[in-house]
Image: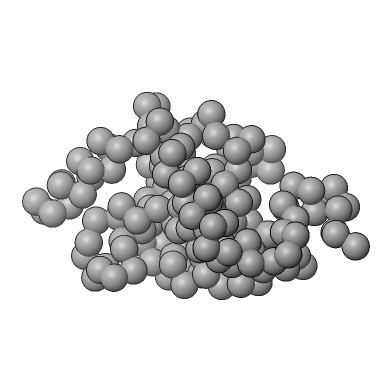
Length: 173
């Protein structure tokens, strides 16, 4: 019980002001920035990973991004720190899971969205940077700059196209 209390205290301490926390098991991965979480009441919630925009399914690196997110969170317990829903009624939140190098008994402090950006498998979604905590904002910026400088993931492409441009029809032809 002490471990649970400590883990809960950590989550609350690092939550943005006014954020709610949804806990559950990841039961689905739609793409590199959308998951489905099943809570303890057996209710499914669609979650849009906050702070990132991953390549679309048919876009270069779309499948790799989805597979990486799946490796990080599928069938694992997560905490979602969230403050809003998007226009599709999905919860938009920071997805926290136990670190991949730690047993499932570890606290959930590993940021899956930040990991996607660090791996070069998602863009830091600057358009929504104002919604990130003052602590997260520089981490995401540094992660994206690091992935770019290492030419990691999609940054190894000659001219990567941001998903928001891809959705507008810019496919780089």
